[in-house]
Amino acid sequence: MRSSLLPFFRWCDETFIAVAVRKSVIAFPTIETFHLLALTLLFGSIAMQNLRLCGFIMKEHPVSKVTKIFAPWTFWALMVMLSSGLLLFLSEAMKCYGSDPFWIKMGFLFLTVAFHFTIYRRITRTQDQPPTVLKARVAAAVSFTLWLGVGLAGRAIAFI
Image (tube, rainbow, N blue to C red; front, side, top):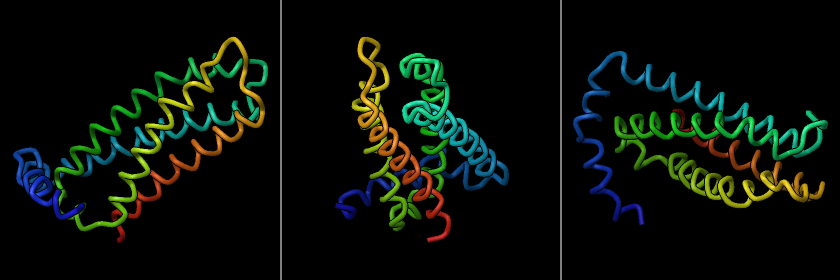
């Protein structure tokens, strides 16, 4: 499958944005800074929601209320991460093409976003009947594991 994507990766690597980011001394580190700050906000908001799902914090508030508070932080941090990640990807598309951690990260990212905006959302936004303890804890564990997989695989791109 990778070989069929090679022309796309080459095109990405040669775009005006990719070349501009590569030629700039400050662009890549600046974009990466925003990417990592967004990652911190995203992981923090997810951690707060997951800790509430497990019943470790904010027990006096319903899960749906905690989710409502942190949902905008999660959404906007994800948007900044995806935007900055796209710029970072463009600037080193051919490096990413040959990087196993990149493909692992993309797999985790797809699964994580799909899980977060379907199953996780259904569990955390239920107002009529709160999730059972087991269902809530499993959702929190899966969420944490998937987001951690995205982060660790992303970090591995720089080293492998």
